[in-house]
Image 1 (cartoon, rainbow, N blue to C red):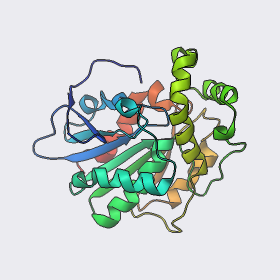
Image 2 (image 1 turned 30 degrees about the vertical axis):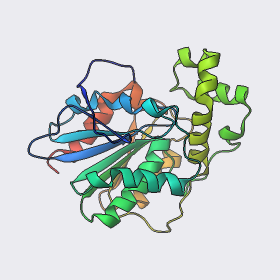
Image 3 (image 1 turned 135 degrees about the vertical axis):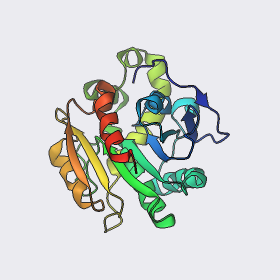
Length: 258
């Protein structure tokens, strides 16, 4: 998302957590937002004032993203999920939901499963965007196995990464290790649980997405609890950047009054 004026970031003392604006009084529902590979948690800073005032937006900052860009990213799902859950656990007793996009949606699914087991009834919904369902095979060849020039060309074709970044060799070289690590995790991710989560899932896909379109995402309805759904959105893989208002409208409708 492009930077526009939004609510002030509130320091939490937790490097994994960014909040924007003051939390609602009385407490409402927390929405944990997880960006795509190469994305920034700061991209969610305008969501707080666009959503129902009872929804507290909490952006999750992973090693290798945003203000943690200099930190080494995780290399396996077990460690990433465990570390992220431990960092968020103090905030999970209150009613909450997750929104994740692409790589972030995969992590959101893993965190929602853990949260629902640990705090039954508190995890009200999981929103996933631009992410194949857990049983859908990853397209080959793997992007993360491509040489640097091919990797950058694939990023350019996929969209989402600003041209000014792609055209800046030094900057791209500095971002490459984190991008490659997170895309590797996204491509190797698969269902290891053998049973759906009890959390209702709202899965959104871009109608023009060549990677995670309707065929790759329709299986999500079988991986969530009652009330799960699969919704078509205008745009491509990064529809949340192109038309955030439509995404926020879906979230608002499902979390307002929860």
